[in-house]
Length: 335
Image (cartoon, rainbow, N blue to C red; front, side, top):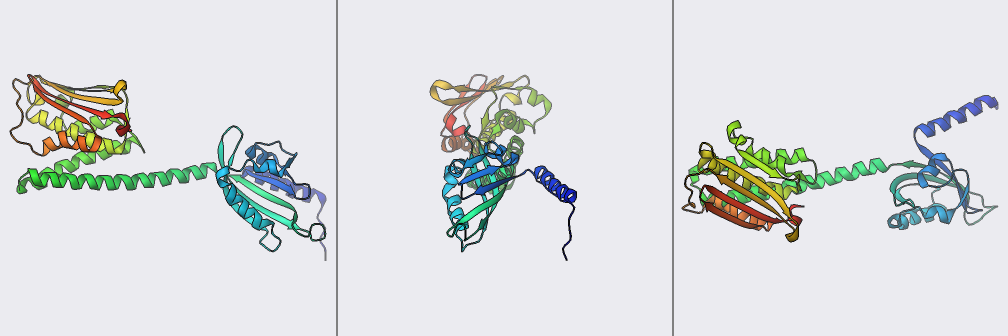
């Protein structure tokens, strides 16, 4: 028994289907292999940058496929067009528009065969295409973040190992746990500043402020930070954070911040002619300052670490009134 469907209900079903495709942002295209042309609806034409409802030569349509993805797409299409192979493919690839914009699309395509009309290939086909650019970008960002996290974790482990080795050579065994804990807290504050900066690069001033956070308001008010907004890499942030912590700790114990009225300025600026960034820590208000009697862990952090990790030129003077410590770091190292 055949059930007749009223024309108005058939039309309604088609209308609802079209609305559903539009809501889902699914474009439709038809392929005429006999005429070697493609016809696109409004959504797919918008996506590929063609005019809707016109016959487009297949060769012209294929120019939209990203050159780096063309071999993969062509291989899958060759399989699709073979009569003895599956007549449906599901592809995700990039397209490249004439204005240089790159998009990602997911396309499902089905072809039809009629041996009486064309014995060796399809006569027609239909495909549905969806813009998945935002999904692919989100996936790429996630992959980047995972790689960045892996890199940071390895770097952090390397730093901790280095700190442990240096401490073992420069402090008494009974002092080792406490001194190690202090340095680990420096890294924790570095990590807080780094995470606040997002992925890839971090604000230098926020990093410096994080290393001054443990001190009271009076001490922090006597440290002046001056420099342009600057973004640095995670690796550079770890090293600079440790250096500033060491300088600040020394200033509180022995230097300008141990004296009433003593002050510290920390300036940074780009030296364009040398492709470097200069950091200068300058203390004022110390009656008398003398070089340390022995080279301990602090000296390693201030002198050896930046040379090895940042390829920096280091200078430390014990001027009348306080220490003047300066770094000159290649801009390429800071990122």
